[in-house]
Image (cartoon, rainbow, N blue to C red):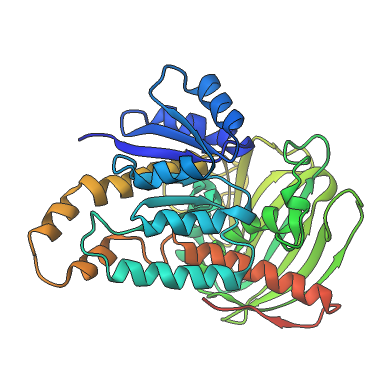
Length: 401
């Protein structure tokens, strides 16, 4: 099967740190045909440094974007742009029938994201075939991290008993030690409400929502929060502490600070028959991997290794970072299936039902890990936290999508 033709839109830090490796690792499945940036120098520098040899075109500006849109050999477009220009470009690519991967956040506001999603779902429903339908896949690597998937499986299996609460703590040093500290667009709170806080926290609430769903808690319905500003060099706010209530009534504490000096990340689920925690950094912990701790009232499942010979109810497992490569593999696989796979040929053969229905059946739906709806739900929880904090802790309803 021929590789998927692809383009990369954006040449910033994340495009260099993550997507250069993603495209090189899966070179037999996906071919990077073009790299686009808003400036010609940036596009040319990216290609010359990372993909030399002439096979990848360096494009820029409106003319370069139009070339990507018009090229039928480019089937998959990865958009790694600041939130301000991202969503309009994503919509233009979808209108051309491309498969699009968008890095977070999904939009500058839930309202704008929801409107774009409605237009996208209408286009999917009316697509003539799976091979020509637009595909909008949202990149939130926390939903693919092996540690969160393992934690979700344990929670959904019921080993913790009745879920009492969830707790999220994310302390991060957003200072000169962080590669993203110099970002100007994250300080633009007019076009990116919440700035650094919003851009960082969508990751954390994605993990929280994932484990809450595995516990049967549903979506967050209301929040109450307070915000402070400690570092004047960051956008407001740099720290938020709040409580979210989920549809089942289960509460979750949320404590996030970008003004901390060290990384201390923890997400725990507490139940009547056990507790589970995913952690990173902190007091003696590793910043380079996650640790999953589980302690239950009874023995561990058969085959599970206890962390201590004296305590058969406690398990500790280390997990390396895996979300970015795993999600990219799924994005490429979904595109290959739609554009080259058996689903395309079977629908073209007229196997019953409308072509639009066949396309919608293959394109990831609203509950899929890769759906833009998931990105909008992450953003909705962040917006509610910020709104409540602006009202001095007044409870605020979380918009449902």
